Length: 392
Image 1 (tube, rainbow, N blue to C red):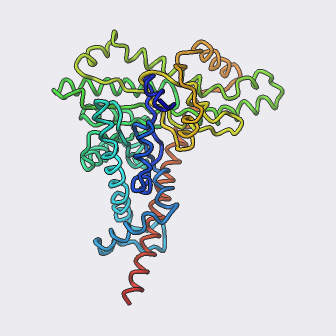
Image 2: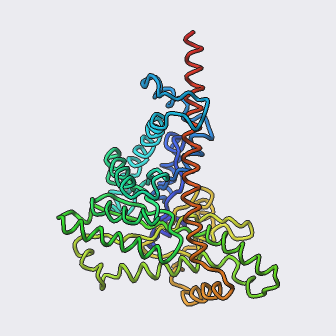
């Protein structure tokens, strides 16, 4: 077995944090599956880079326009383009990618009895603070894709968490994204459990619904290390040894909460007996951001049963080449608690840090989504002009 397959044997699924039409058509996605990748995640930034960073989608945009006879975009003012028309083009580009990837992953889903083989599509980040709109869009996207191995991604904002409970109660698979703090993770897990309980009361099949809780890792170190560096520069010697430790400590303690909340001997046991699946922690943002850290740091230290690690292609390759393949998530839990306590002693408010990271994460995805729509609008204008010129 290679390292990716060894991780799977230890109970950790490796998913790829990237998707594009080129990956699907070239056979790259299938190649990744063949070496041990068992799922895929996407987000607005990934699609923004895929669609705007190449001409790969131009033919499909032209085909959409040929059958559309005009969406109303004038292309002169990005604030005035026909949002509904451009979003329609966006979905006609993205949904086929998600559907085709889901079909390629379907054998994995079947082989693992619905544990793996998923791909995720995110609701518009512009809806992150609107519960009813999030629920409506998630239901629409899930119904449109009509595949059991699709997750709808919902951010763990104050308005997103009640949406998660409602969607699970309706039997919709949810990937909860942008979780940074242990407190928010507990709310997310509780929302999932409450949703399953409602689904059970309605007579639903608990075994048919799945969820993962995407706990972001490296961004925590980026933010905390900046604060630690400031304190170190003020001759605070205690700050130096904490560099690069906050994110992994945070994740290890989140995993400890996971084991508590999904203990079969606890309240979840009744749901598990009826077919309910645990909501696996998914380690997201696992590529290193600091060049001084080893390239598999956010993989090697977080290996554990019932977990997922979603990695960008470069981290997949590094893990394949020299990743660590032993259970590590349960090690050093007391050290992790001390690390967070020491941060507090240095007046680093981790709750404030993670709240800001959630806000920034939603803002980043919303900006990527807006940039993507504006780029599609420009491409639409260019392609219409080119078509008109050739017709003349």
